[in-house]
Image (cartoon, rainbow, N blue to C red; front, side, top):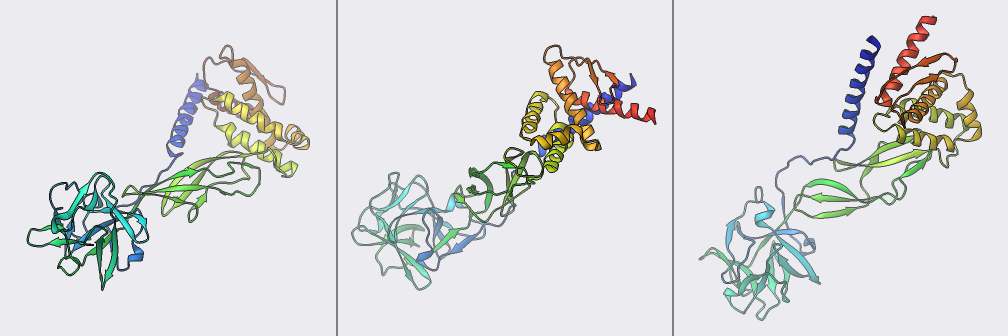
Length: 377
């Protein structure tokens, strides 16, 4: 009864450890909140396709939205607090310094040669806007008849199209500088399986950087990949870090194709049995055994000989665990019971448990084996 209680305690500890491991297996970083950032554009070469901008004049901005029959409305612009969702227009390049301007649904257009010609429509227009610097300000000039400019009309506090010499034409264009929210794997690394002791690489890996303004940029450099030790057999988690945010992907280290020395192969396999995949069999014993058998098959004949005959404590214990797991899976496939197992010293150890996880039996075996050794001393 005492032994069953001890093994039950071992099960609880194992389940807790597995639960913690599962929770911490994947990490997706979140950017810390930072002040809203808008950058004043002082050169037309800094206007970038697909970026978001506030169209402003002397503290006023052109509010995004649908304006099919009225002049676009104005709001007060605060470059430290304005949110892109309610403030920004996206500039789409359609030629050399030729821009279509949209809020994602509506496109700014010039409908006729007059102050009331500034409107929006849901279809992308054929006319475009050209940017020109005027001192420290920018003019957005229509390709439509009259080449009128987007302008703020102070008498009505709205936006219209005026001639080039009119007041309200000299705009300040602010680009929204987005914050990184998350990253994700866009294209997997070319190599996800590495022979034991081969140098790790992440060639071909491309990530998507996802920003708070809903833009996504493909990144193929500038990130760091860590967490892989190719001297350790089994599945491992590679962690990509970019600007303080992380995302994981899975890598496997295998004996298949390794050029490592025989003793190192045998040692790596024994370690995997004891502290690697062989020590995490809870709930999926058959899969663990399959993986260990596969790796055993990749050992050189000399490495197999070392594993099977060495009297080193690591190898002795690994052989016992490996044989015990093999016996358990074979016996439990039908009845769910493991009836007996003979240790290396030919001392019979009879264990009868019905419908229990193999991780408990493995732990129970080593606990009983330890007690038996203590009695011999």
